[in-house]
Every structure is written in C-alpha cells, then in structure tokens.
Length: 534
Image (cartoon, rainbow, N blue to C red):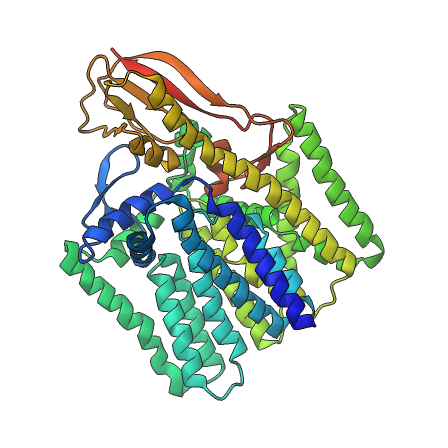
C-alpha cells in the first residue's frame, strides 16, 4: 500500500512540474543554449567554433564557460522532435523525472519515514520547478543525484567496483555538463580513502581520462583547452545579470578587487539564497523547542502573508524579507553542518561544504540554480535520524507550495512578456522596415524569430529610418555613433494580487549582496522600448 502511494505521489509530482514548464516560453539562458545546440546539430565535430552574440558583440562559443554535453543531447532531441517549446521541454521533463525518482530512492535509504515528503519538498521547490526552463541545471542535478546515490546507497554492498565505476561515470557526465561538478571528484577520492577501497582506486581514472579526451578534442576543434579557458571565464570576472546591477558597476569592481570583502559578500549571498529557498531552518528551530513549534510556523506563514499584502499595497519590504532569509539560512547551516558519525551523513555534508565553497570562491554571482545543487543534501541531513512532526511537514509543504506557486506565475509572465512583445512590436511597425533588436534572454530568441536583426556593437550599421527595440532590463551594447528618437514603450505591469517577483534584475537567475533570489514587490515591471534611428 505504501509503495503504491509513493508511486502515485511521484508521478503526480512529475506531472505538476512538467505541466508548468511544458508551454513556458524560452527564457533567460535558453536562447544561448538553442544557438549552441543548433550549431552543434550541423557541426558536431566542431562544437566550440560557432559564434554567439550574448552581450552585444559576437564572441566564439569557446569563450563561454560551459562544456557542451547537454547541448549535444539538445541537438539530438531537436533533430528528432523539432524546436518547439513543448518538444524541447518534454526532454527536460525526462530529467525532472530522473531527479524525482533518484532522490526518492536516496531518501528511502536515509530517511524512509519522510521519503515522499522530502521528494515533494524538492520537486515543488522554486529552485527546481521554476528553474527548469531549457537550462542545464535540472539535467545536472540528475547526474549529481546519481553520483551520490551510488556513493551512499552502496556503502557495505558487495559490488564495490560497480558502485564506484557508476559514480565515476556520473561525475564525468556532470563535469562535461558544467565545470562546477569538478567538486565531485574530490568526494569520490575521499570516499575511496575513508572506506579504504584501494582496489577501486582505478575508478578515479574514468573522469580524468574523459576530461583528458575532451581537452584533446578541444585542441583539434579550436586549438585550446576549454577546461582551462572556460573555467577561467566563469571565475575570473564578476559579470552579474542585467537590471539594476548596471548602475553600480563601480561598486562591483571595487568589491571584486577586494578579495576578503568579495568572499564575505558571496558567503552572505549564499546564506540568503539558501534561506530564501528552503524552510528547514525554521523546521529545525521548531524541533528544538517543540512547545513553540506550531506558533513559530503560524508566525512564518502569517508573516509571509502580511509582507505579500504590504507589497501588493505598494510598500517596500525587501529588507525585512532578506533578514528572514538570512536568519533561516543561518539556522539551516547550523542544523546540517553539525558533526555526525554516520558515514552517509558525512558524504552529504561534504556535498554541502564543497559545493558551497566552490560557488562562494569561484562563481561570478549566486543564483537559485546554484543553491539547487545542495538542496537535496540539506533536506536529507535535516531529516536523517530525526523525527519530523506532522505539523512541521504541513508547514514545509505549505510554505514551499505558496512561494513556488507565486514565483512560477511571476516567472512565466516574465518569459511570456518578451515572446508576446516580439510579435506585437513587429506587427506595429512598417512591413518593409529594418528592425534591430538589442539584448539577450528569451527576448533575443523571439525577436530574431520575428525577423529582427541582432545588434553587434562592433559591426552593425544602423541607417536613418531603421527601428531599434530595446528591453532596458536586459544587458545590451549599441554602436557608439547612432542617434535615435524615442517612440514609446510597452510596459508589463505586475498585478497587485501577485506580488511574488523573479524578474527585478532577473535576481532569481543571478543576485549578489543582500538582494536575495526573489522579492515581494508591486513594481515587478519590465518593458520594451521602441526607437527610430535618425
């Protein structure tokens, strides 16, 4: 009976996350992924030689910071099923199903009494359900979960060669999707040392040999080693997403130049991000003081409702919200990093610590998708060997579900706005006019699909009578010598009844300092501005 209930619950969770993402317009980094996969589709032996116009100038793909394994999968799927949103998001839903199934197995091994609840907390988390899009992070998480399931569930089993070989393959696949997965290789080494598995040490050669082969292929492809240049591109400079960040570049450069301040700021951002995307800090606090637990849960739910109401009335409540995020994040870290003698929990804590250190030290910004990589470990450590009351589970699901529902609606509207405006603006302008589009994200994809030309600040020649369309919230560059006349703006006005916001500065996809990945705000607006070249 329990097994049937779990299967029904897992399928229901998969249908929920798939239904949300299936018809969602392409969004944020999806455009870059589509451009790269389209290039690979026609040039599979030279994946890094193509070009990408992401920040207003054309650059070769090898200057980006992401290896192409996921893009090869995307290209293959495009060849078989086409380029539509439902077709490509169906591929993404298969990775979501893998995450849900593999995590549930891991949860049944470590915390069987809470397995289905923990899986629901992960699948409904906004970092998971909102961030699906067409981005690499859910497929990446599937590889990470496969790796740690092999490492943790295989402790004490007879087939140790198979266990470590499968873990090594998962690690190698993850690294070839995103270089942040290099942290899995030290975990593999530590597991071999702690368990004294000298006979399985050969498994370390699997990711090493595959990375060496990938690097040799890079030399053949474009004459460099992407593992070095790509990782350097992601770690060396601070390049936050667009929006309000643009107006504080001097401050960003100042902070980036002062390493201790930069690390402190990123550590704070990491804590705030975890507190914004997980409620296990509050649940652990309730468990420590059982008499006050229910009151604590009611205060948190009531506080969220009150802040949402205040935001809907036009009040700014970011500072209060971020303070709550920081406190909850701090409580969460205190709970999950407390020393434990259980070897499986030690592996989970290694997962949390090494991933956190990588993003604090090496990432140019913090994003919800970065936090997503530690959320499974955080929830498992918080639940393993502990009693979690029924009221705590209800609170966790309510808080997670309410926030996820609000952010899902906000982010869908954010993505849909640029898709609709690309069609609307094109139809409103003269049919024979030359129309230029600046900026990236989903806007770039839909603008070019509707016949607009991409701006290259170094090469594009705009002539009198041309039109220029700019979404001001998105990073862009323009040729230095153009003069334009402002014709008007198409503005999306957020509903006061939906104060949750992922789109102010696209903070859900990149934030820094004391912003937090989401906010409650009545001014979650974005726009498209229309100019005529003079």
